[in-house]
Image (cartoon, rainbow, N blue to C red; front, side):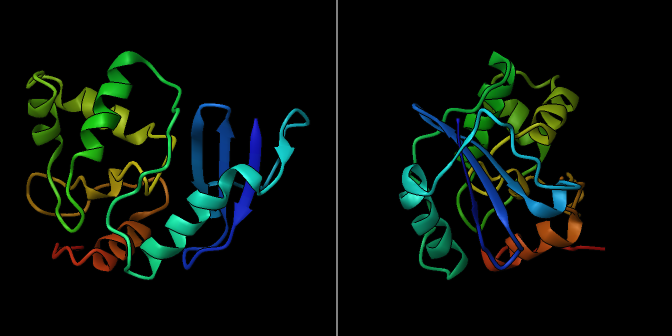
Length: 160
């Protein structure tokens, strides 16, 4: 497993990858500390393109990430995460919209749970999922961070 810490406007981002692609992107505020597994190799090498794309995203020059992803989760979670990647930049949708998109309209709560377990924040844009009433819902990095990302993308949502 490879690991790298990258600066961003939201603070330090921890990137994890295996030989197949990115497996994790977490924001420092989501973690109490930066524990490094002794089996991880701290290196920037496999993350060069990912860091470039993150910098371009935060500067407003990138609207779609193309780095290889290799998230670990259940088949249902992976199905939800693929659906999240189909939400266009600058748009939002509800958990019900995602449940409908994966042809499982009764799985709204399960979609919410899978959304909350997304291991690759920002690139798998779980921040684009809002409540069916148009209000911001929970986010692992905090609702303020979610609001920041949506404003960066030009989404107009109520955050109260």
